[in-house]
Image (cartoon, rainbow, N blue to C red):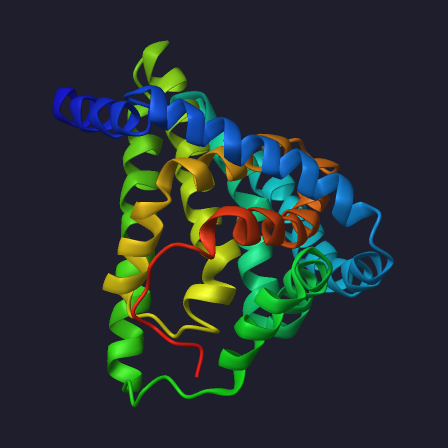
Length: 265
């Protein structure tokens, strides 16, 4: 258990800002989240796209809440043993519902982002849109599967680790909450911006990781408030759709300028 606690502590420490530039980037991302959400809610086109997003997303979210409530009747001793697990699940349900919606209805998420991006910067919108019809440069289905496994493994590994560590009295629950919040925020960033990195620029896992690493703290500043709000049962999860739309603001203002070897077409 000591080894697990040390590894969890290392992960949490790595998730904390180390210098003034990190703090500055966090603030930049946070302010973009606030401004972007306000703007997105006032965009009639985004509101219409949000309604289309809400139908499948709401069904997935409600279904998982129902499963959690039913399962709690039978597995409540596990929640007693691992007190951080329930908090983790409440954080993960909106994230899982978002991913399921994206897998089943990919255009819904893409349209939320692109509708707001068109308002923010039409030229960038046009450039990003060019890549949607392009091929992935002959990447095989096997390589795509391997890349997706790599993207998922980091998240799954630390999520399981934080669940185990939550059994440690007092500090375990704190580490689990802080770590899971940072983990969901990090993974949410990968998903919000893969409309650009994967769907438009068709980056490999290595290229996407480098792009995300170059923008780590500003993206984390953007996604942290959403990961915290979405953990609020029943109400919070429905902010995710506007997170996707408001991501267009941070993208146009900061992320689009990040050097990349990938062309849109």
